[in-house]
Image 1: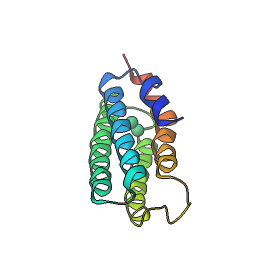
Image 2 (image 1 turned 45 degrees about the horizontal axis):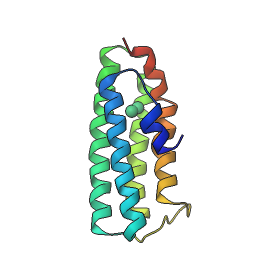
Image 3 (image 1 turned 135 degrees about the vertical axis):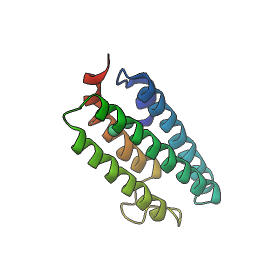
Image 4 (image 1 turned 90 degrees about the horizontal axis):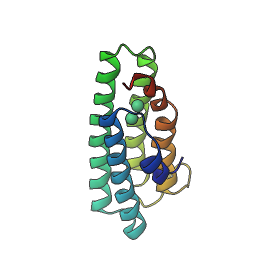
Length: 131
Ligand SMILES: [Fe+2]
Ligand SMILES: [Fe+2]
């Protein structure tokens, strides 16, 4: 799933989460645009910081909704959030010198795999919690 498709098409049906997913995609698009324009810069690292902060807050909100609704797959979903935050920290370092030190793919492709994969997989299960 591309970032654009995620922003326009994917819905859990829980408005606060859908709103935040769109907001996160907006930060990722700004980050990719900044990176494409200028490579690794102060702006890129600030946007990485913003993405990390927004993602942490978003995951905390999702986890509180899952706890409140006694979601059966809470533990696995939370573990995936923790893995995603580790990956963002790793990406921040990998892209410091202008390209991914590990996979050689674009930052956009890395972020799509990072976020869209989780949202299309684990977050799709949250539709069962929407009222
Ligand atoms: Fe999410
Ligand atoms: Fe999630």
